[in-house]
Image (tube, rainbow over all chains, first blue to last red):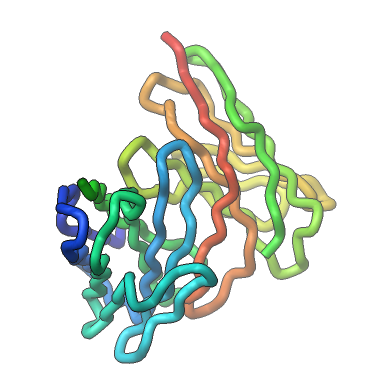
Length: 116
Length: 113
């Protein structure tokens, strides 16, 4: 099956610094990837849609200047959390779809971000 | 996308069959029903998808009545490793697969020995 990886799996950073999270589709090309955020005991919340070769589409309430998304190739999307604060501590998950007739999406293993 | 309602939590014992029901009263004609499983600190994993009647795979069965306003995920003979959160999602099935998924609250299943 299609595999999506994320790197790093966990990261601890100091308040005010920036952190980059990578999402890769390992055995398929993904023109569109999605970034979700999940707080403890809560459901996944869509942050943005990452489109290869164009600007990302952000959900309402998500600051595009704080959460920078780059989708420079068909297998890689990156999310950079700029000037991180403790409230940005969360579980960040990406997903990608195989371009078939299914709405099945493949999710990465997630990245645990802790901002101290 | 149609809103879904699921029980917040369920408890079961090893070896039992578990049925998780999801309500989606506003499901549209083109909508499919998809279930995902999520373990702690992992990304969700696709379990099963269906449109009507019954769908079965090696992991679970999905029962969808004729009016499609609800669906039931059936897990046969659960084990401790089935302890997870199960999400029911409803949405159309675009050809390009470029539609983001809207997750509801999910059902937290706890399997006891």
